Image (cartoon, rainbow, N blue to C red; front, side):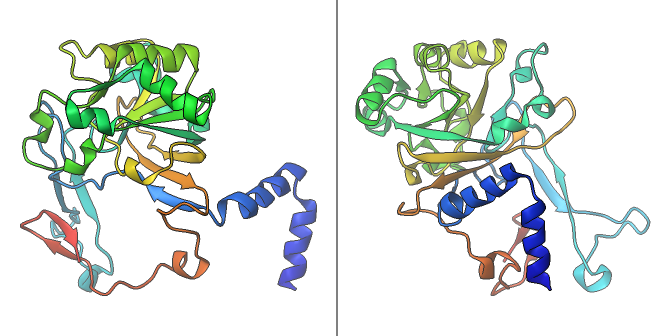
Length: 294
């Protein structure tokens, strides 16, 4: 009976929906999924001008006591975040310019795009403050082809491998993306946005790259992670971002969808994905760390 109902639903569904389901089975079901976002925690690297974060147990306002698994059947967490510019993020233009969209006004079409990754790791090894140049983009295109319009370009520097090191956010020299490279990517290749691993676009005194982007209506991704685990071309990027009303920053979850033959990532697994597997240890609140862990 169930099979008959499912077949009837498929036959009644719009043709476009059937095509996307087929596309999922052919392209996405066997793909490799790579998480490109940092885990948010109280110690997360953040600009000193925003201050620290605090996680705490959610409190029942009626009793003034924290919810507990044993007593209430559930637990919840209260987050005291000093900024919406934290961790891996989607930086909307309203961060610098009130005349352009805030995070809740970013179109849903940002959710899925072709993904390009350009590495400047070798250059950064020689100069920690090296910024992506137009010649780096052109060299990438000579090897992999023209960067497609509407894609997302990630700039790999491996700076994120030092994430959460004390004092990292205060360092004045870090890898970036030059203003000329941003002009080229947006005005010549018409990309959707670019992403980088540090907390700012570049380390110029006036933040020239970030200023140009956000003052002119462009977005960018900051605080990226695991860019060493994605291919230079051929992958897709899934971007999930919140809808805080009038938000000037967006905590984001970035996931790269890579070809099935790619060496990194996880695949769809119906037995593992739902229900999720039982963990070897229970989740417990740690007052010293300020969050739950196993």
